Image 1 (cartoon, rainbow, N blue to C red):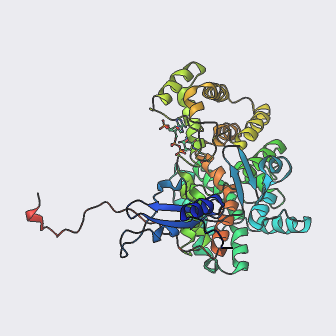
Image 2 (cartoon, rainbow, N blue to C red; image 1 turned 135 degrees about the horizontal axis):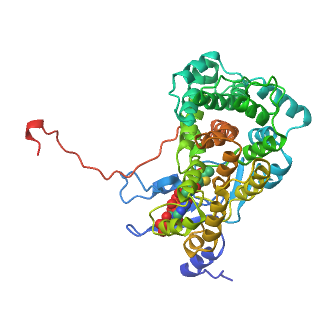
Length: 446
Ligand code: ACO
């Protein structure tokens, strides 16, 4: 018996019915079809390059300003589900880490993928603690800054300057060297930050105290005055440590992207961290908590909140600390921070701006403008109020973000370096400028 030969139409229908991990694209300019593999719900942009009208064309690209729908790497560090409000480091929910872990333990987890054993944690803390001192010459850089220099500007410059003190850091493919720079960077960030702060006050620098915890020593370097031994308040020390855990990493945000992008040129990690810190300085990123405080001060009283919200809805202002590129739900970090805020206020007294913040939040969570756009409080909305109550000036807020984020930046940098698929970051462009034209001598120009 002759087999029944299916008609071409039936065959194509059958083929279409069998699920395959591919995407079929039809170029309507040529009628040609292309079958592109799908992996992890993603297509490779380079697979589009085969789509051409003429053989000598460059080929098709994807256009994605601000990378809103482009995965630039494969990562195993941090997971965010922005719609569900989920944040996990190496699989561990942020809520559990904030409750049970310490910043240095979390930094180890982020960097090395697993929670440390007791011995590993002790060794890790020992190395970080013994790399907190900075070269005395760094103080000369700090002294060169004007008394009112923004501490983030001082941080960016002094982090970059560290690269000149540690030329061994250029050996980026040497695991031992990377480990050492990691201890140095995580260890020295609080020292640079505290020294920048003391410089702005004209106070003598307070040196690290190895008997204190990471957060406790930072408070010591910031606030020590005449006492022989500074003893940090346990509530403030733990609050700061939790804030550090919450800020340790946040996958491919603007500053992590800067770290990866600059690091992809194979520059040393200090220079790349200075670039990441610069990215964090901007008011749309790490500068937002500073902007929140300024906004609350500008609103000034509960009675002025509706008027301010009206301006936001009219597009004249932004409600700082609201909205996020990936969270379209309550930022899970904001929930934890709100709890810490009350613990700190209990000790330090209620921040008078809290009432204004709560009223902004209450209105925004009910108002159609914010609900429709899924604008919820982000990590920065309450962190500024806590920092202010702890005695930090507003300009130190982004610095308090940069210190813990250093562990995330290094983890992102190392993952990028060791990924065989990564190369120097080099996006494409769509050129819409002039076509070729001839130089016009100055006396013949319009
Ligand atoms: N206040 C008022 N309206 C806002 C706000 C806000 N804070 N954020 C977004 N919107 C509106 C936009 O005007 C836009 O409205 P439209 O659709 O009518 O034009 C819509 O919501 C979408 O906003 P986009 O700017 O497209 O969202 P994007 O994802 O690009 O921006 C960002 C995210 C930058 C965080 C933004 O929400 C913002 O500027 N927020 C205030 C600054 C802030 O708090 N940043 C901290 C972020 S968290 C961090 O970096 C640690």
